[in-house]
Structures are given as C-alpha cells and as structure tokens.
Length: 164
Ligand SMILES: [Zn+2]
Image (cartoon, rainbow, N blue to C red; front, side):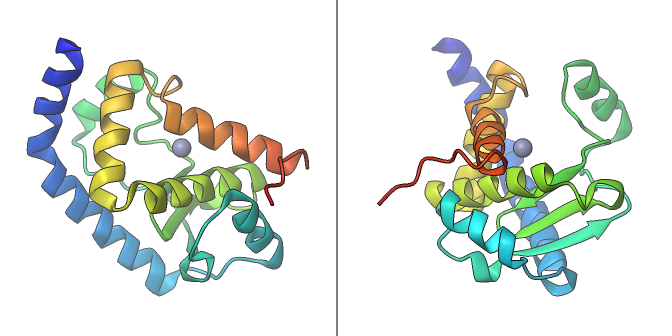
C-alpha cells in the first residue's frame, strides 16, 4: 500500500511529458499508418474496441523511446523490452517494428491495448495505470500486459468467448 502510494507519487511528475510524447506519436502513426484489415477489424470487434475505424498501424524501423540509453539499459535488466520493443500502442496509433509487422500476435496484442485506452478513458489514465502496474509488479506480471497476451492468444486460437 505504502509502496503503491510512493510509486504513484514518483509517476505523477512524468505523466504530463509522457502523455504529450504518446499523443505526438499517436498523431504521427495516424497520419502515416495503414487501416486495419478485415481480419483485424474482426479481432477488434471481439476485443470490444469502440472506434476500430480510427486505428492506424505504422511499420517502423525502431520503436521510439523517450528514455536516455542508460535508463533503457536499467529497464532492460528489469525485464522491460525498452529500446527493443516489437510494438507500441499509442491508443489509436500503433507502431509495429518492420521485422515484426506481419506478426498477428503482435497486432492483436497491441489492439487489446487500444481497447484498454478506451476503457480507462484517456491516454493519461491508461499511462498512469500502466506505469503503476509495471513499476510495482514488473512488465510480465502487469495485469494490462497479461490481459493483452491472453486475449491475443485466445483470438488467434479462435477460442475467444463470444459475448452476446
Ligand atoms: Zn503490451
């Protein structure tokens, strides 16, 4: 509890910059990215994305990071894919590393993050929750990441529970 509180305090000062940075990259991906394929639109429906028509996917050489390299190294040691991520979701703008851009799992995973942004209400709210979780629990144990992996897997295995 105290740990969560102090982490929240530590996260607050970086939220304005981090939110601005993500919005900037969202705009970039929205301007240059491609629309979702029919198959990806179907996944989006299953995931529960409200505005799948807004989503654009941009294949890029390297996923950008706002972090200086010594912090990247520190995070890599703690299990974060900092600096060598294969994708990144900025709400409706999604970056996919060129070498992974054809990975269905990657696209489905990032689309789950799009739904999480919608569900949490804003880039700010998503980022706050995401940073809290990953700092407190680590990247692989973060519920938002676990949900993205589990849902992507279920969709690709075609055993996604259909809600009516
Ligand atoms: Zn993820």
